[in-house]
Length: 141
Image (cartoon, rainbow, N blue to C red; front, side, top):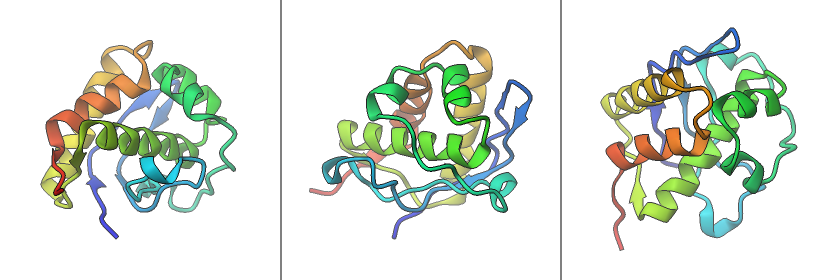
């Protein structure tokens, strides 16, 4: 199972502070063609349980950073499930894979943090997609 560690994802949205996260395996709500393997487990949410996904792919693709936070029920683990799902969709659409290094995870987290803080009204997918474009490497055929 491939993983990507986000070591410095200090996103603050409506009083929520994320410190780090790891990509693991994808929630089952994403079609197999779009799965890359990755539920997110941030250190700050390790003792918390993600809520059962109550969103559709279309909902999170069109949700702003703020809207996604509200849709998550203000649950860090659930929010990171959304980020993970979006990262997998983006990587699939872009034909890239995410490196398994701490350095890549740190860069990925910093990009998401910076872009999310810059505009909480930005689509969360756009924030994640920008990071995937910069961090992703071409997938092997």
